[in-house]
Structure formats: C-alpha cells, structure tokens
Length: 288
Image 1 (cartoon, rainbow, N blue to C red):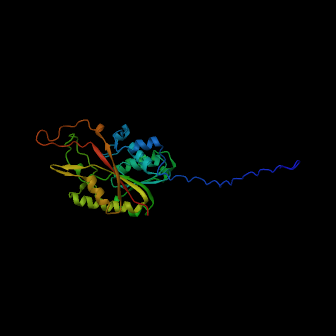
Image 2 (image 1 turned 90 degrees about the vertical axis):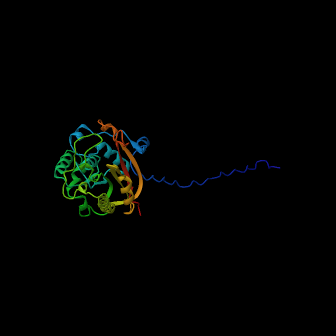
C-alpha cells in the first residue's frame, strides 16, 4: 500500500546512442554524361552523325566528323584536362575537337598538306588546352619518341584502310582520292598480311602510351577486292588482343546519308553488298 506523501518513482528516459554519420562514397565516374545522354550514346548503331559544311570542304579522303569525335570523347573520357591521342591525325579532327573540349590533343601525321590544314584548324580554337595541343609532322611509328609511356587517357584514330583508296570506287563511281602516297604510308602496302602486321606494331606502341584502364577506339571498314572479302574489323581486333588489348565492344557508324549515287553492285550476275557503314572498335587496356 503506497505511503501518503511519498515521492513517486521517476521513470528513466532511455537514451539511444546515435552512430556517427558516415559520408557516402562518391561513385567513380568514367565520364560526365547524364542518364539521357548515356542511353543515347550506348545505342549500338549511330546514324545521326554528320559532317559540317566546313569539314566537307577540307577534301580529306577519309575524314571523320568532329561530331563523332566529340561523342566518343564525352563517352570515354572522365573529364577536362585529359590527354587524347590520334596517331593518324589527318586533317586534325581528333586534336581540334579535344582542344575545344578542354582536353590536350596530340596528333601525328606524315602528310605536309594535312599537317598545314590541321594546325590551321587548331590555331582557331580559343581554349587554353589548344595552346598545349600539338600535331607532330611525324610517322605514327615515331610515337614512342614523342609520347611518354602511360600518359594518354584516350586514343581515337582511323588508320588507312590498307591500299583500298588506290582502287576504283565501284560503289559510287567517284574519283580516286588517297593520302598522297607518302613514304611510310600504310595505304601503299600491297600485302594484306603485311598491312595487318604493321598495324599491330603501331597499336603495340599505342598500348604502351595508354594509361591502365584507358580506351582506344579505332574507326575501320571491312573491304572487298574483286571476289575476296576482307573482314578488317575482326581481323584487326583479334590481332590486337595478342598485344594486350581487350576487345570491349563495337559500334556501327551508319554513313548511308553520305552515299547519294549507289548502284546495284554485281547486278545481275552476282550479289554484292553496298557497304555504307564503318565500325568503331572499342579496345581497352585493362587496369592492373
């Protein structure tokens, strides 16, 4: 029985211990794309890439548009300040676009004509990165002398497609246009096996200058000479795996909009395919 005047017991409050907050780890980003742009770039066929009027006037026989370069850089480069390499610089599209995106572009080119064109385009880029970008008048095989090992964040290039530019264009009957037949030009090699061997030698040097984990995207097209078909994209990619590259994936670049004079090849005796696409081989130097 409770005693009158006695104090009621005070209920003790339970004190919960709060664990110290742990900051969330910032997710590693391979690029700066938002989800919408990421999805668009991940589609395996790119049909919306176009050359500008200025690019069409340059006259390079195998120029790829800055729109293509920009899309690949934004996809495979983590951010500004990256080093982007093109050992077959041509008229400078890779270097010029990289500089415009605040990356440092490095190109190598053997043609005096295209060197002048590329350097002129680079001078017109008004970014700090353009001051540190360069197009060397040098063979792609001089790469080890010009670029330090494991210093490149991304490589984008398009080697000569064997000596196919020396051949008559049967698909659209346009005039023959080649790179100038300079000394050391891979486009003058007669043997397909020798041509592939030389490419492997070159991309071994590219592999050595890439940082671990970096990508190399190679723009190529399969070829045909008379009755023989040459699957250049798979032949090259397969050989590059012997260098150390991993064949990560590929994208089809649909260029049909550029072909306005196609004809029925082989008609009516033998069916032949009109090739209006190129491949973007996505090769990677694995980390570690």
